[in-house]
Image (cartoon, rainbow, N blue to C red; front, side, top):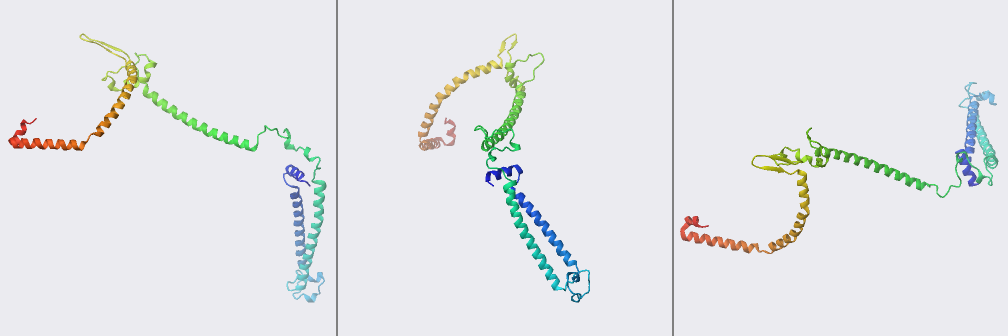
Length: 293
């Protein structure tokens, strides 16, 4: 039997042909051992008189069972059973060796010329040989890993989306100010509504719409907060340019300050103060300090 035929039969039967023959031989050997055991028990249960031994050799006189003190009958039965077992094992081995050869050559076999053209039942509908574009085990494993990573990424994106949605909801609740029924809602001012929702907004004179307050003495016009915010934003480039111009000056000022000898300045100031104190004390005492600027 060639390796190709053995692989084909193994795939068809789901077991190797040799395992089938081994199971048959093991079953026959089990039957032989059971038969030999039954024969041995039967011989031991027969009285020695029926086995050809004289009655005088049986000291107990019990004809139901073999006397255990009768060594000749016991030894002869054990030797006979052992010889029978050896004979049957040799016969079974010799006979089933022939059975194995005959079975592998004539029953469990496929002609070598026919094996490449045989198609098993589970191969129906498949194109053999497989095309070059067919997936390989390595490509299938790589795709499986990609699917797993995609699922992990999808789960992470869903969690991020949920967190972002919660954050946006909280921001919308902060940006949306309570409006009165008489004031129409303006989408352009909704983003700055949180500035006027605070109680201090009236003190700071913050408003999203222009309010005209007429009085007898003055006429004051409050600009809307959106206009003020636009003005502040328009001034940001100028402030940025001014800051860029101040950076070199601050750096040079730091260098100049770093070059000053502060220790000598402290000594000069201390000497000046001591001199003034001595002058004041020598001239008029402590009372003269009232006239010192």
